[in-house]
Image 1 (cartoon, rainbow, N blue to C red):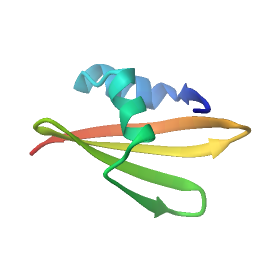
Image 2: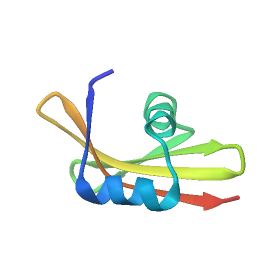
Image 3: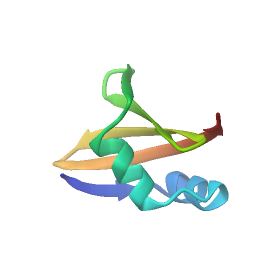
Length: 74
């Protein structure tokens, strides 16, 4: 897997919502669903227990840049 970089916004969201790097990496490696959002942005979705995780990212300069993360209780 490529190197993963987190924006300040993504790090804040992770802290506020108690989302770990491991959960994000699992979502990137094996998403349940993906969708394009604009020219370069991708949203990856994965169900983790009772949570649905959404990871928004772009691929730039041989690395994955995590823009934002959101979770919802399902």
